[in-house]
Length: 159
Length: 464
Image (cartoon, rainbow over all chains, first blue to last red; front, side):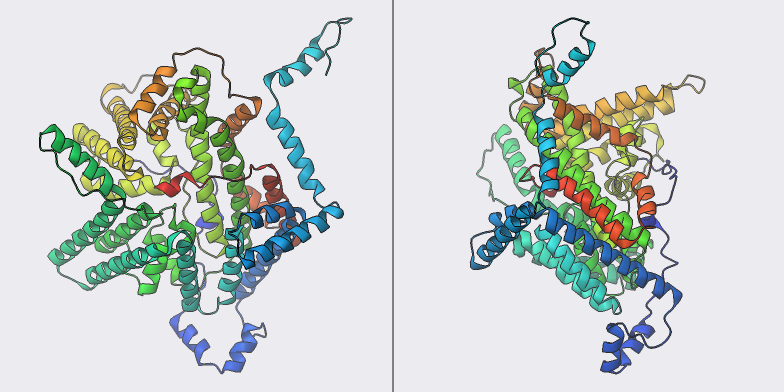
């Protein structure tokens, strides 16, 4: 809040705060050149058949984008399979329309099929353990300690 | 879930338009308006009008060489922004206060009360608009190339409703270029999103429902243990809530190829309140410093003037959060303690006196911040006073279960994680193959989904 104070030193620069000067620039001339190309060539380029020489930076950026897209796709598929109860819960919260009813029906079928395959188990196991922890009282925390420190021959507390 | 689907569509569409930056920006603007319209479509017009105003004023400032005209224009731009903010956010408050004052003076009148709906994120996008106009006037930022850039600057959906307040000088240069994604950025973005979801849906949400909301609803029903626990719990809740939003916003923007500034930096490990404001809501504290404290004179007018400037800045910072005296009182507490710190360091403390141990500094600062949070969270002064009186009521705590205590301890412990822990994890994550990275991120989000409570409340800062 004071203007005589510099920001605290940062141990490592964040990748999100890297200087932007290194990033390649899409100049107006380049954009215009792209627009001036015949539609078929633009379509082919957009489909991945690049004409002309891409720069190293373009190749690196394309690889990074593919890496990111694949990672997001895998994470999404994993969640769609192992987190199906959330999809169903969400579907039930939608306002009642033909579309939301269809989504709800599909989510119900999807969830029940995955439950038959046992794919809801990882989520259920974590959820149950977490709920048990939520329900714990201080007595539950202290009891194992008492048992551990009970003198020899003393009656053991019932668990 | 809806936001997840919205993001997936936006992500795929945005990168498919990457070869044409203008169309990419047009799509992002459209997506941002859809995002905003999801809450209330009527206020998309306000967003567009606000952007149009700031674009026009900044353009006139940029085109003019006449100093007087430029000063007039910047004053006009700031005033109109403040009128917009004042009407939507403070109209009811000011009318109510005016009515009270007239009543005290014996001139009781029926003032025109209206129920004005507060447009979500108005405090953020008007501050952003003002900073753009002022920066163009100061020459710190060139005027935008196009109206589209200013529209997107103010409407870009990751920061639209609750910040961070991204300056034009940070974002406009990024809009001028076709963004390039790097693996580091993507991995950082994915981890920030997962971490933000954990903080919001697990820690903040559970603390709110299990401890903070019931205690603040009726503080007289609880003893000192629960009240102290709820004050600490709220400190953790608001940090986990607001920093989670910032993390998710930064992560989403990163996946779209844009860099946002960091907004939080382990604030509860601060040794002084001055340091706290360099770590808490950094985009707002920097904004207040650059556009309010420094123009008031900063620390250039002697100790007394500095203290007055600090106090004004913090009072207005409090008012920015909401139209209520409790927010102003919250700002007053921060302003007072900042003033005491300033007087201590400048006028009282001798150079040869030993420094306060770090642990004591952190402890005192944290407790001052928690004391101020009680006012911030209370819906009225009466509630806050009842809360503070209850601190002397020694009864056994009823809400501080092992689970709640673990959440509070965990929320505080994350302030002592190694600095930039997420960035370091991202540096590792980006080196592994994408399916493995996707599995890790998916498992992290699955774990959060498995343990989070159903029905998570909206982010606290949506109301500001």
